[in-house]
Length: 396
Image (cartoon, rainbow, N blue to C red):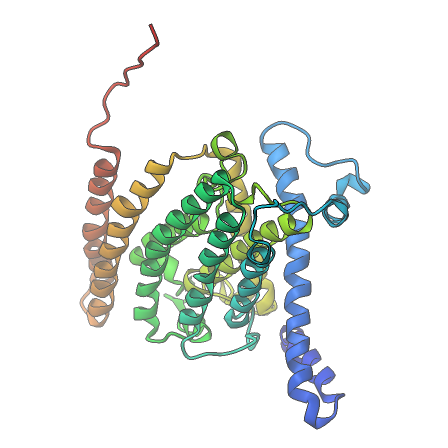
Protein backbone atom coordinates (compact mmCIF):
# COMPACT_ATOMS: atom_id res chain seq x y z
CA UNK A 1 0.00 0.00 0.00
CA UNK A 2 2.90 2.39 0.67
CA UNK A 3 4.13 1.74 -2.87
CA UNK A 4 0.67 2.45 -4.29
CA UNK A 5 0.45 5.63 -2.22
CA UNK A 6 3.78 6.88 -3.61
CA UNK A 7 3.50 5.39 -7.11
CA UNK A 8 3.52 8.77 -8.88
CA UNK A 9 6.50 10.00 -6.84
CA UNK A 10 8.42 6.78 -7.48
CA UNK A 11 7.61 6.93 -11.21
CA UNK A 12 8.87 10.49 -11.42
CA UNK A 13 12.10 9.56 -9.64
CA UNK A 14 12.58 6.55 -11.94
CA UNK A 15 12.05 8.55 -15.12
CA UNK A 16 14.28 11.36 -13.85
CA UNK A 17 17.02 8.84 -13.07
CA UNK A 18 17.11 7.74 -16.71
CA UNK A 19 18.35 11.18 -17.80
CA UNK A 20 21.96 12.41 -17.52
CA UNK A 21 22.79 13.89 -14.12
CA UNK A 22 23.18 17.41 -15.55
CA UNK A 23 19.67 17.30 -17.07
CA UNK A 24 17.83 15.65 -14.18
CA UNK A 25 16.49 18.90 -12.60
CA UNK A 26 15.11 20.00 -15.98
CA UNK A 27 13.61 16.56 -16.69
CA UNK A 28 12.00 16.46 -13.24
CA UNK A 29 10.44 19.88 -13.82
CA UNK A 30 9.13 18.93 -17.26
CA UNK A 31 7.62 15.70 -15.90
CA UNK A 32 5.74 17.63 -13.20
CA UNK A 33 4.47 20.19 -15.73
CA UNK A 34 3.33 17.44 -18.11
CA UNK A 35 1.58 15.55 -15.30
CA UNK A 36 -0.28 18.66 -14.06
CA UNK A 37 -1.37 19.65 -17.56
CA UNK A 38 -2.48 16.11 -18.40
CA UNK A 39 -4.45 15.59 -15.16
CA UNK A 40 -6.22 18.93 -15.05
CA UNK A 41 -6.69 19.11 -18.81
CA UNK A 42 -8.49 15.78 -18.53
CA UNK A 43 -10.44 17.08 -15.52
CA UNK A 44 -11.54 20.06 -17.62
CA UNK A 45 -12.85 17.81 -20.40
CA UNK A 46 -14.60 15.43 -17.99
CA UNK A 47 -16.09 18.22 -15.89
CA UNK A 48 -17.63 19.94 -18.92
CA UNK A 49 -19.43 16.79 -20.07
CA UNK A 50 -20.42 15.65 -16.57
CA UNK A 51 -21.66 19.12 -15.67
CA UNK A 52 -23.86 19.31 -18.75
CA UNK A 53 -25.23 15.83 -18.16
CA UNK A 54 -25.82 16.51 -14.45
CA UNK A 55 -27.57 19.81 -15.21
CA UNK A 56 -29.73 18.03 -17.75
CA UNK A 57 -30.70 15.39 -15.21
CA UNK A 58 -31.43 17.93 -12.46
CA UNK A 59 -33.49 20.14 -14.78
CA UNK A 60 -35.36 17.24 -16.39
CA UNK A 61 -33.94 17.63 -19.88
CA UNK A 62 -31.43 15.90 -22.14
CA UNK A 63 -27.73 16.54 -21.86
CA UNK A 64 -25.19 15.79 -24.63
CA UNK A 65 -25.98 12.30 -25.93
CA UNK A 66 -25.14 12.27 -29.67
CA UNK A 67 -21.36 12.40 -30.05
CA UNK A 68 -19.81 9.07 -29.12
CA UNK A 69 -21.25 6.49 -26.70
CA UNK A 70 -23.55 8.28 -24.23
CA UNK A 71 -22.23 11.60 -25.59
CA UNK A 72 -18.82 11.10 -23.95
CA UNK A 73 -16.94 12.46 -26.98
CA UNK A 74 -18.71 15.83 -26.77
CA UNK A 75 -15.64 17.58 -25.22
CA UNK A 76 -13.51 16.41 -28.16
CA UNK A 77 -16.13 17.70 -30.62
CA UNK A 78 -16.25 21.04 -28.81
CA UNK A 79 -12.45 21.31 -28.93
CA UNK A 80 -12.34 20.58 -32.65
CA UNK A 81 -15.09 23.12 -33.27
CA UNK A 82 -13.23 25.83 -31.34
CA UNK A 83 -9.99 25.10 -33.19
CA UNK A 84 -11.65 25.35 -36.60
CA UNK A 85 -13.82 28.43 -35.98
CA UNK A 86 -12.65 31.72 -37.44
CA UNK A 87 -10.77 34.03 -35.09
CA UNK A 88 -12.50 37.39 -35.55
CA UNK A 89 -10.72 40.45 -34.14
CA UNK A 90 -12.51 43.86 -34.25
CA UNK A 91 -10.79 46.40 -36.48
CA UNK A 92 -10.61 48.99 -33.72
CA UNK A 93 -9.31 46.54 -31.10
CA UNK A 94 -5.83 46.68 -29.60
CA UNK A 95 -4.51 43.62 -31.41
CA UNK A 96 -1.64 42.81 -29.05
CA UNK A 97 -3.67 43.04 -25.82
CA UNK A 98 -6.61 41.27 -27.43
CA UNK A 99 -4.30 38.35 -28.23
CA UNK A 100 -2.49 38.29 -24.86
CA UNK A 101 -5.58 38.50 -22.60
CA UNK A 102 -6.66 34.81 -22.78
CA UNK A 103 -3.04 33.70 -22.34
CA UNK A 104 -2.60 36.01 -19.34
CA UNK A 105 -5.74 34.53 -17.76
CA UNK A 106 -4.76 30.88 -18.27
CA UNK A 107 -1.01 30.85 -17.59
CA UNK A 108 -1.00 31.98 -13.92
CA UNK A 109 -3.56 29.32 -12.93
CA UNK A 110 -1.15 26.55 -13.90
CA UNK A 111 1.40 28.07 -11.50
CA UNK A 112 -1.13 27.94 -8.64
CA UNK A 113 -1.27 24.14 -8.93
CA UNK A 114 2.45 23.95 -8.16
CA UNK A 115 2.00 24.58 -4.42
CA UNK A 116 -1.06 22.39 -3.83
CA UNK A 117 -0.35 19.06 -2.04
CA UNK A 118 -2.33 16.45 -4.00
CA UNK A 119 -1.14 13.63 -1.74
CA UNK A 120 1.59 12.65 0.66
CA UNK A 121 4.89 14.01 -0.75
CA UNK A 122 3.02 15.13 -3.89
CA UNK A 123 3.62 18.88 -3.96
CA UNK A 124 5.43 20.16 -7.03
CA UNK A 125 7.08 22.88 -4.92
CA UNK A 126 7.03 23.08 -1.12
CA UNK A 127 7.18 26.79 -0.29
CA UNK A 128 7.27 28.08 3.27
CA UNK A 129 4.74 30.71 2.18
CA UNK A 130 2.82 28.59 -0.32
CA UNK A 131 -0.58 30.09 0.44
CA UNK A 132 0.75 33.62 -0.16
CA UNK A 133 2.11 32.46 -3.50
CA UNK A 134 -1.30 30.97 -4.35
CA UNK A 135 -3.22 34.18 -3.63
CA UNK A 136 -0.60 36.36 -5.35
CA UNK A 137 -0.80 34.27 -8.52
CA UNK A 138 -4.61 34.27 -8.39
CA UNK A 139 -4.78 38.06 -8.37
CA UNK A 140 -3.17 38.18 -11.83
CA UNK A 141 -6.46 37.10 -13.42
CA UNK A 142 -7.99 40.52 -12.73
CA UNK A 143 -5.47 42.19 -15.03
CA UNK A 144 -6.21 39.66 -17.78
CA UNK A 145 -9.97 40.28 -17.54
CA UNK A 146 -9.49 44.04 -17.79
CA UNK A 147 -7.14 43.56 -20.75
CA UNK A 148 -9.84 41.56 -22.53
CA UNK A 149 -12.56 44.14 -21.90
CA UNK A 150 -10.54 47.26 -22.63
CA UNK A 151 -8.72 45.94 -25.72
CA UNK A 152 -11.98 44.91 -27.42
CA UNK A 153 -13.09 48.56 -27.86
CA UNK A 154 -16.65 47.52 -27.09
CA UNK A 155 -18.83 49.08 -24.39
CA UNK A 156 -20.42 45.75 -23.47
CA UNK A 157 -16.96 44.20 -23.08
CA UNK A 158 -15.71 47.08 -20.96
CA UNK A 159 -18.77 47.02 -18.68
CA UNK A 160 -18.43 43.26 -18.31
CA UNK A 161 -14.75 43.64 -17.39
CA UNK A 162 -15.55 46.30 -14.79
CA UNK A 163 -18.24 44.04 -13.34
CA UNK A 164 -15.80 41.14 -13.17
CA UNK A 165 -13.07 43.18 -11.50
CA UNK A 166 -15.48 44.63 -8.91
CA UNK A 167 -16.70 41.11 -8.15
CA UNK A 168 -13.23 39.55 -7.97
CA UNK A 169 -11.78 42.26 -5.72
CA UNK A 170 -14.83 42.18 -3.44
CA UNK A 171 -14.76 38.41 -2.93
CA UNK A 172 -10.98 38.08 -2.65
CA UNK A 173 -11.23 39.81 0.73
CA UNK A 174 -13.52 37.23 2.43
CA UNK A 175 -11.66 34.42 0.63
CA UNK A 176 -8.38 35.47 2.24
CA UNK A 177 -9.96 36.29 5.61
CA UNK A 178 -11.60 32.85 5.75
CA UNK A 179 -8.15 31.28 5.30
CA UNK A 180 -6.46 33.21 8.12
CA UNK A 181 -7.92 31.15 11.03
CA UNK A 182 -6.48 28.03 9.39
CA UNK A 183 -3.04 29.66 9.34
CA UNK A 184 -3.46 30.59 13.01
CA UNK A 185 -4.32 26.99 13.91
CA UNK A 186 -1.49 25.44 11.89
CA UNK A 187 1.12 28.08 12.76
CA UNK A 188 2.46 27.92 9.20
CA UNK A 189 1.95 29.35 5.72
CA UNK A 190 3.08 26.10 4.07
CA UNK A 191 0.21 24.11 2.58
CA UNK A 192 1.73 20.66 3.32
CA UNK A 193 2.26 21.74 6.94
CA UNK A 194 -1.38 22.85 7.13
CA UNK A 195 -2.43 19.37 5.99
CA UNK A 196 -0.11 17.69 8.51
CA UNK A 197 -1.61 19.85 11.28
CA UNK A 198 -4.99 18.19 10.54
CA UNK A 199 -3.69 14.63 11.01
CA UNK A 200 -4.90 12.33 13.76
CA UNK A 201 -8.29 11.71 15.32
CA UNK A 202 -9.98 13.28 18.34
CA UNK A 203 -11.48 10.75 20.79
CA UNK A 204 -9.96 8.08 18.58
CA UNK A 205 -12.42 8.41 15.67
CA UNK A 206 -13.23 12.09 14.84
CA UNK A 207 -10.87 13.55 12.19
CA UNK A 208 -9.01 16.67 13.28
CA UNK A 209 -10.11 18.51 10.14
CA UNK A 210 -10.61 22.23 10.48
CA UNK A 211 -14.14 22.02 9.09
CA UNK A 212 -15.17 19.98 12.16
CA UNK A 213 -14.57 22.93 14.47
CA UNK A 214 -17.09 25.79 14.90
CA UNK A 215 -14.74 28.41 13.45
CA UNK A 216 -13.73 26.01 10.67
CA UNK A 217 -17.33 25.31 9.65
CA UNK A 218 -18.11 29.04 9.47
CA UNK A 219 -14.87 29.75 7.60
CA UNK A 220 -15.51 26.91 5.18
CA UNK A 221 -18.95 28.33 4.35
CA UNK A 222 -17.48 31.77 3.70
CA UNK A 223 -14.67 30.20 1.66
CA UNK A 224 -17.06 28.21 -0.56
CA UNK A 225 -19.24 31.22 -1.35
CA UNK A 226 -16.24 33.43 -2.08
CA UNK A 227 -14.67 30.68 -4.21
CA UNK A 228 -17.83 30.40 -6.30
CA UNK A 229 -17.82 34.17 -6.86
CA UNK A 230 -14.08 34.22 -7.69
CA UNK A 231 -14.66 31.49 -10.29
CA UNK A 232 -17.70 33.27 -11.83
CA UNK A 233 -19.88 30.31 -10.93
CA UNK A 234 -23.65 30.57 -10.60
CA UNK A 235 -25.25 32.44 -8.85
CA UNK A 236 -22.34 34.86 -9.26
CA UNK A 237 -21.94 34.63 -13.05
CA UNK A 238 -22.69 38.32 -13.63
CA UNK A 239 -19.68 39.25 -15.81
CA UNK A 240 -21.16 37.19 -18.68
CA UNK A 241 -24.75 38.35 -18.09
CA UNK A 242 -26.30 37.46 -21.47
CA UNK A 243 -29.53 39.35 -20.87
CA UNK A 244 -27.84 42.73 -20.42
CA UNK A 245 -24.20 42.44 -21.54
CA UNK A 246 -24.41 39.86 -24.35
CA UNK A 247 -21.35 37.94 -23.06
CA UNK A 248 -19.51 40.54 -21.00
CA UNK A 249 -15.76 40.79 -21.58
CA UNK A 250 -15.99 37.76 -23.91
CA UNK A 251 -18.24 39.54 -26.43
CA UNK A 252 -15.52 40.15 -29.02
CA UNK A 253 -13.80 36.77 -28.67
CA UNK A 254 -14.35 33.70 -30.81
CA UNK A 255 -12.70 30.43 -31.67
CA UNK A 256 -9.83 29.12 -29.60
CA UNK A 257 -9.34 32.38 -27.67
CA UNK A 258 -12.93 32.03 -26.45
CA UNK A 259 -12.18 28.46 -25.36
CA UNK A 260 -9.08 29.58 -23.45
CA UNK A 261 -11.20 31.84 -21.27
CA UNK A 262 -13.41 28.92 -20.29
CA UNK A 263 -10.36 26.76 -19.72
CA UNK A 264 -8.94 29.41 -17.40
CA UNK A 265 -12.26 29.70 -15.57
CA UNK A 266 -12.47 25.96 -14.92
CA UNK A 267 -8.80 25.74 -13.97
CA UNK A 268 -9.36 28.55 -11.48
CA UNK A 269 -12.29 26.60 -10.04
CA UNK A 270 -10.09 23.48 -9.75
CA UNK A 271 -7.31 25.45 -8.04
CA UNK A 272 -9.52 27.12 -5.44
CA UNK A 273 -11.33 23.81 -4.82
CA UNK A 274 -7.99 22.11 -4.19
CA UNK A 275 -7.11 24.91 -1.77
CA UNK A 276 -10.41 24.41 0.07
CA UNK A 277 -9.70 20.68 0.43
CA UNK A 278 -6.23 21.50 1.76
CA UNK A 279 -7.32 24.15 4.26
CA UNK A 280 -10.54 22.73 5.67
CA UNK A 281 -11.06 19.07 4.68
CA UNK A 282 -7.79 17.56 5.85
CA UNK A 283 -6.10 17.42 2.45
CA UNK A 284 -4.97 13.87 1.73
CA UNK A 285 -5.98 12.45 5.15
CA UNK A 286 -8.61 9.71 5.38
CA UNK A 287 -11.88 10.36 7.24
CA UNK A 288 -11.35 7.31 9.50
CA UNK A 289 -8.29 5.49 10.81
CA UNK A 290 -9.35 2.15 9.28
CA UNK A 291 -9.41 3.77 5.81
CA UNK A 292 -5.82 5.03 5.88
CA UNK A 293 -4.65 2.07 3.80
CA UNK A 294 -6.17 3.70 0.72
CA UNK A 295 -3.83 6.01 -1.28
CA UNK A 296 -3.58 9.59 -0.02
CA UNK A 297 -4.03 10.98 -3.55
CA UNK A 298 -7.27 9.00 -3.79
CA UNK A 299 -8.72 10.74 -0.74
CA UNK A 300 -7.71 14.14 -2.08
CA UNK A 301 -9.38 13.30 -5.39
CA UNK A 302 -12.57 12.12 -3.68
CA UNK A 303 -12.91 15.32 -1.64
CA UNK A 304 -12.05 17.40 -4.71
CA UNK A 305 -14.73 15.64 -6.79
CA UNK A 306 -17.35 16.13 -4.04
CA UNK A 307 -16.76 19.89 -3.97
CA UNK A 308 -16.88 20.12 -7.77
CA UNK A 309 -20.24 18.33 -7.70
CA UNK A 310 -21.43 20.82 -5.07
CA UNK A 311 -20.59 23.73 -7.39
CA UNK A 312 -22.48 22.01 -10.22
CA UNK A 313 -25.45 21.47 -7.93
CA UNK A 314 -25.43 25.18 -7.02
CA UNK A 315 -25.49 26.09 -10.71
CA UNK A 316 -28.51 23.87 -11.28
CA UNK A 317 -30.58 25.32 -8.44
CA UNK A 318 -29.71 28.94 -7.68
CA UNK A 319 -30.82 31.98 -9.72
CA UNK A 320 -28.40 34.74 -10.69
CA UNK A 321 -28.02 37.68 -8.30
CA UNK A 322 -28.19 41.36 -9.21
CA UNK A 323 -24.92 43.28 -9.07
CA UNK A 324 -25.97 45.35 -6.05
CA UNK A 325 -26.99 42.17 -4.19
CA UNK A 326 -23.66 40.60 -5.08
CA UNK A 327 -21.55 43.46 -3.71
CA UNK A 328 -23.72 44.00 -0.63
CA UNK A 329 -23.48 40.30 0.19
CA UNK A 330 -19.67 40.46 0.09
CA UNK A 331 -19.11 43.65 2.06
CA UNK A 332 -22.09 43.61 4.44
CA UNK A 333 -22.22 39.90 5.26
CA UNK A 334 -19.19 37.81 4.28
CA UNK A 335 -16.43 40.23 5.30
CA UNK A 336 -17.88 41.00 8.80
CA UNK A 337 -18.65 37.31 9.36
CA UNK A 338 -15.09 36.36 8.37
CA UNK A 339 -13.69 38.95 10.80
CA UNK A 340 -15.85 37.63 13.63
CA UNK A 341 -14.72 34.12 12.72
CA UNK A 342 -11.15 35.28 13.36
CA UNK A 343 -12.14 36.20 16.92
CA UNK A 344 -13.92 32.85 17.34
CA UNK A 345 -10.84 30.98 16.08
CA UNK A 346 -8.60 32.92 18.49
CA UNK A 347 -10.95 32.07 21.39
CA UNK A 348 -10.94 28.38 20.37
CA UNK A 349 -7.15 28.21 20.17
CA UNK A 350 -6.55 30.14 23.40
CA UNK A 351 -8.95 27.85 25.28
CA UNK A 352 -7.20 24.72 24.03
CA UNK A 353 -5.41 24.22 27.37
CA UNK A 354 -8.58 23.98 29.46
CA UNK A 355 -8.59 20.73 31.43
CA UNK A 356 -11.90 20.69 33.37
CA UNK A 357 -14.71 18.19 32.75
CA UNK A 358 -16.79 20.13 30.21
CA UNK A 359 -13.91 21.94 28.50
CA UNK A 360 -14.74 20.84 24.92
CA UNK A 361 -18.43 21.63 25.29
CA UNK A 362 -17.58 25.04 26.80
CA UNK A 363 -15.27 25.85 23.90
CA UNK A 364 -18.04 24.97 21.42
CA UNK A 365 -20.51 27.12 23.34
CA UNK A 366 -18.05 30.03 23.43
CA UNK A 367 -17.53 29.97 19.66
CA UNK A 368 -21.25 29.45 18.97
CA UNK A 369 -22.04 32.46 21.16
CA UNK A 370 -19.76 34.56 18.97
CA UNK A 371 -20.83 33.20 15.57
CA UNK A 372 -24.58 32.45 15.77
CA UNK A 373 -25.79 35.95 16.81
CA UNK A 374 -23.41 37.52 14.29
CA UNK A 375 -24.81 35.32 11.51
CA UNK A 376 -28.41 36.26 12.38
CA UNK A 377 -27.76 39.98 12.82
CA UNK A 378 -25.63 40.31 9.70
CA UNK A 379 -28.20 38.38 7.67
CA UNK A 380 -30.99 40.69 8.78
CA UNK A 381 -28.88 43.78 8.10
CA UNK A 382 -27.90 42.55 4.63
CA UNK A 383 -31.55 41.87 3.73
CA UNK A 384 -32.51 45.32 5.00
CA UNK A 385 -34.09 44.40 8.33
CA UNK A 386 -37.26 42.40 8.91
CA UNK A 387 -38.75 41.13 5.63
CA UNK A 388 -41.75 43.16 4.47
CA UNK A 389 -44.54 42.32 2.03
CA UNK A 390 -43.56 43.09 -1.53
CA UNK A 391 -45.45 45.72 -3.51
CA UNK A 392 -45.69 45.36 -7.25
CA UNK A 393 -46.17 48.43 -9.43
CA UNK A 394 -47.60 48.11 -12.92
CA UNK A 395 -47.43 50.56 -15.77
CA UNK A 396 -50.63 52.57 -16.17
